[in-house]
Image (cartoon, rainbow, N blue to C red; front, side, top):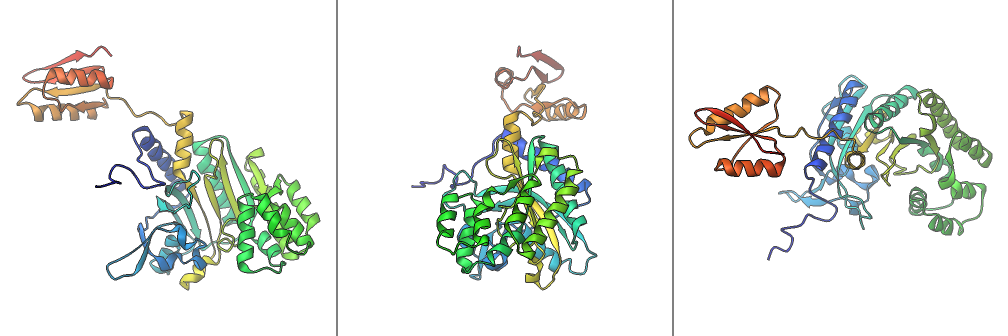
Length: 399
């Protein structure tokens, strides 16, 4: 018996009608922003070798990946991330191309979210990667592109900025293993205050332990940086705060107002990101719909070192929010159902094409009789049925 033939795997779902329209609409809106900003579209394979996503490179635990083997027994994964495949492409096929390289993508990624907790295992992701450019100008280019992309879709988003180097500088001051550091990072990222405090209570209570304890709460405006400066005397950490301040100052002139926040608890995939990190939130979605940052060390893995920065947007989450708000333009409804009498089937199809060319939404009938065509049209809310035979006549359906 096929026990699973009528259901989808956990963490996946079918998209029907309005959901599919919303997804395609958001993808198109984001793509238009990226293209207008000078980025060029690329697509990468849905299947990649596992070696590309080894945890020491990607920061993605092995258990989060969907794995299989090819005909030669080599370990493969379904693409869990778009940045690494694009980095591979840049380091191989485009290794001699003039830098910087500006890419955008719109493709599905697959993550085995253990326990799910409302997350999907299959996500449509759109984003950009700017490879071969470093410094403030490149960071501002990418972050303002993120702002423009969200602005195109929703008015009430929030951008949070932080710095991966801040947590790293503080954590390096603690006498802990890499495994313990990763646990602390995870507790900060997930705002798990209880587990974070329990772990830190076991350490000597130094100023660095104290500020790490407060990281999830160091969130707000420019005053967050002032408070962090009073708590910390590590020069490397203070330099990261200076850089956040500079980025914040520039972005404040971009008209974001209170939609721009500083979050020193942004520590996701901390060994992956090297400098500035940022997230985007939208009212109605519990998870960030946008995650990005600078990853200057990633291309070292391909023996083609280059600075890089980018972000990815959860298209599915953004589409759900916009659909719920009624922000997705409805599909144009069918105005005419064209039904051909027996022997006039091709003429009916041609007449349907003629109406479409005249910008009239028309559908060709596959019913056997006029009565069935009229019933179908009434059920679908189509106001007119045009019958094609030796002559053409149109009937109102009364809807």
